[in-house]
Amino acid sequence: MDDEILFDIPEVWEWSRIGSLIEIERGGSPRPIKDMSPSRQMASIG
Image 1: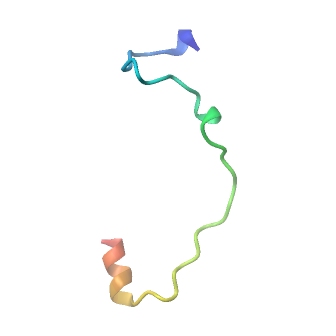
Image 2: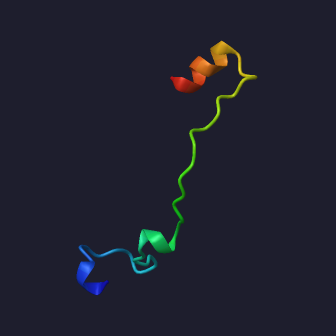
């Protein structure tokens, strides 16, 4: 990994590959919230 480091980071940080931090899984889209009124839905969009 040392040959892939493009810039310096603070000493308290650590370089890591994203695959060692998270696990990506396939999934579906979130379901809409049915109990929200239309005005609250618009407020959450904008």
